Image 1 (spheres, rainbow, N blue to C red):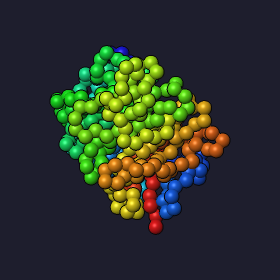
Image 2: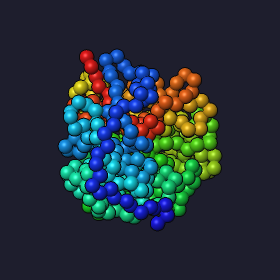
Image 3: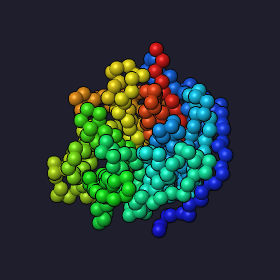
Image 4: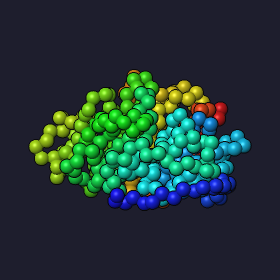
Length: 369
């Protein structure tokens, strides 16, 4: 299958212990958070860290786009994960990870696999079970985000294999769900260019998902999107219409933007919103409860870069009302990029973890009164 590499399992692998690198400590000093919040490095030396998932015994699993899947453990309970296990390598962009009932699910480009009883076997990971292998193998926008929904099903997305195109295969540019055993594949939404982040709003339990807009329409078009899926199969516009109101110059044609589902929130163009999490913990002040934290990975070809932050999208009665920077400083005033946030994960104590695939670290954000 195109782009697929043989899997290499690491048997009897001892955990790697590490300390925070001085240059990464220096980055921390450049980051800005609201008063009362503290940011530290939870784990260092996690190359290309992407999506995160937490096991029931406190093990943090991290997917990457360099072929490896990691497990991190805070063995001494000091708030820093000092042990790192490499569970597998030479996978096909295993960016997405999800955990349920003792098993780690990993989304490669072309399939979803499962490692059973994984927390008890970190140093001798089992060979995986193939859960679902009917996904396209195109590398372009092929990396995936993976999460279990409130209904117990696995949710993910299939990106468009291009910057802008209209693929014949309707699997491209879609959201889908499957049962945990791989049965019951269902397409939920179409017209979605590249979704690498979604979560369920705690009040309505509606699914909200980010979508990264197309390139080459200039610095400020189109806005990146936050969309809402409420249960029916819907089309969100790609490649015909962007951000609900901008016809595509190549594919717009006679299509009316009004016939598609528009976004519920428009981010700035090219900020690349990826992982997101509605906050349901009790550590942060009350006004953060049920609010949405979004990792904005940052623009890659805008003339003046933007993004490179964790944003806070404020919700009221299930609808987004405003957007504010929450953690900034990865983009300096001179335009230097110090880091690129990817995913946001809530810990049992109410702190947040944020992955950074540029620095290869996991940050921890706490509120200290």
